[in-house]
Image: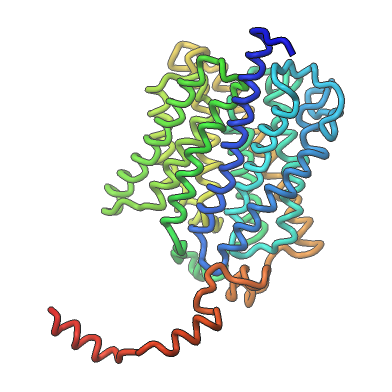
Length: 438
């Protein structure tokens, strides 16, 4: 093949999109670690299995049906009707990269939306019904929202809604779907007392959760800059800077706010604050100045600290804070475009027009995520049940749903035999020896 400037540009853009798709897919590892760290040890394998099913069942669903509904030819602005199994003509998309590169990038987004819900329903949802949700989310719930905003025929796109990388399409959708899911599912046993007071149920491994957050942060450099679909777009540098600054501001504001409010900086709030900043900037990262990204991220971090206890107070049990991080901050970030966008933003003299469009768009998408998930979970609850028994919940879903535990050292027979041979010191003797050493 003869090399031309055009073919080289296509090659560079293709490599860029594939690299960014890999970064977005790596975010599933971040979700798995974050959520596993935020739950009890007896449920950590189960949450990882749910994330894994998003990557397996979800990808298959998006391949067979979801991508076509999202990016197929459409005359009504509601749903695509062509392109199943990535077959057919996609000229209407106007892509400068191969359709397969575009598909794998979009598929990584689809499973990210489904995975948002996995953390909210952790520690009490049956595995089988979750698989059904993951399939429906990537086949129907996410594709329709994406079609409305991210295709030329989409009705919200025609109105002028701006959501560059998915504060609304991915995060608000997933966040408010999570709220619907936990309402139908109900709280974990022991989370709330009869008087409505909340019992704190801390995760078993916050360092693991922090590692997950760092992986997610890293993956966001594919999520946001990759949405240009071109490595030759000069705006990718500013998008990356805005992404980074918003995360930094969110983590900082959450840590400082908890420090001043409670007297101690809360690690879980700081972790989710950084993620909230990332979620909030995702809609406007290509449209705002870096100073605006600091404001957006900083506000998002404070919203996290306020939103997490709010959802506890209304009885919505969310073990990982998914509703606050994705629902609240995704909604705020979408609205923030109408305020801070350099072209059309309120503070830049654009009036209320863009802000009104953003408000309409994020409201419709949030309601779609909430209502569709509520109906799906209600149907599954009536048909097969969606909750494990109280006994299974107490035993842990790792054992009841998968027949094994995440931490097996003390259960290994050889280890138990070795452990029984070790000398055991009486607590009193240990105490006396310790005092003697002092």
